[in-house]
Length: 273
Image 1: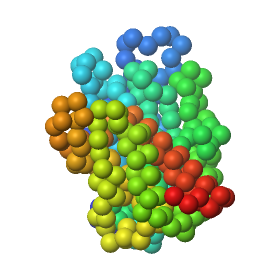
Image 2: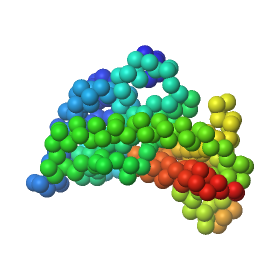
Image 3: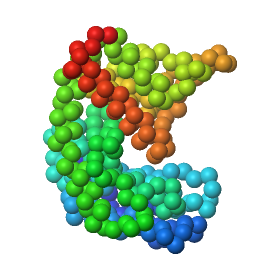
């Protein structure tokens, strides 16, 4: 298996994100709240052939939330773990949960790209059922959700191949970058040149396909360091990385929807920028 990407044991997950192993919910929940101990479902994923490879949890400002906060776990199939260098992209399952009422039990589909180790989260609207509320929660619902997410994986492979087949002009690259800027920043107060998001950091991204441009933009936004100007103070600074679970997933999903629209327009109307 890859030295960098391998299954994580429960002991390793406990060190990375202790909230995964909370044995009870925060005291303020109601009697109707069905506690879902995330760690007790780890073997459900393993039995389905998916193993945890990454985890994190939100930082908390209120110490009363410590140990109950929102957390995220990324799962990869055993097949892909056994052949870590067979592909350039892998389809993974992303689980989000909390023990303080801040989140339902949510499963998302993500594409993990090896060249830059970035995770592209697919909008949940693609699936029939991915969010499981804590009231009436059952393990069968989790198994059904895993099945639903994995059933969409062949479709997303086709979509990635389609994105790779679409060529963007310079003007179209800039328009896509500007759309990403609108998602992330208030353009009434911040100015960012589109070129800041279009820099080629990996040789694999040199060809201006929709897939490559999408990845350039996503990586720049998520990792930060983009030069910006405050239009009010006229001061220049660099953007911060997107670290929070909610902000990361929200940006990823909204950007993916924009890329889908570009693909649709390019293929159906032969849009000329």
